[in-house]
Image 1 (cartoon, rainbow, N blue to C red):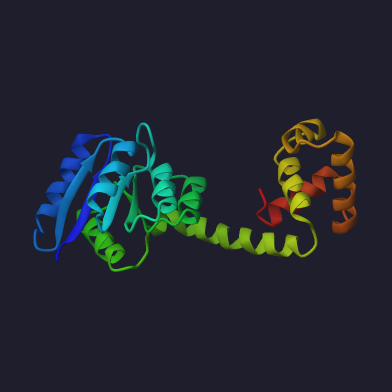
Image 2 (image 1 turned 180 degrees about the vertical axis):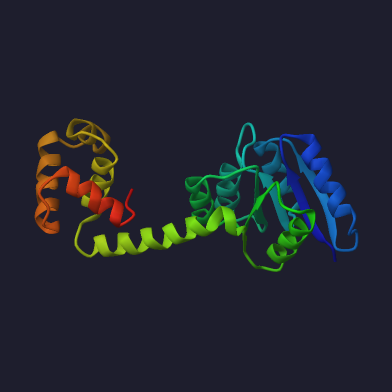
Length: 213
């Protein structure tokens, strides 16, 4: 049976181009649905239950990441490939954490698009190296850093470190966490004691070294 595909992109010319590409291999691929925004794409996926959905990262009404999260939340039996003109590190990291099955850059050769969909439909993961290799390295470093920090610090203290290292002042942190400013100071003092540091500069350096920010 051919691989059943849904295409979603807010540029009809992109959808037409992809559909024409898959039509070159009619015995292997079949486009069963199209959408020009994220909400419509979700409805089409619910209706057709395709094997693979190729969705644009940036779409109106619901972007590719939002669509991916909704698909996972509803446990829809579809594998999702994010299609992007470009994708930054945070977006790629968010996609990986949300369970994306593939990330494709629009500039890739057509044959690589077909290969990606084949592999994803077969249960493999396709992460285009140039857009994700650094992301994966940073993800591994971050997860290792979080585990190491968690062996010393409480979840609240790690959250506070992230906010402080991100440039928030004590008053802003207290508002964000809905705790008193004095409590923030106590938490920071405890963090300094546990880590053997003495200033906010050292705290930022620690957070960066562990991938917490």
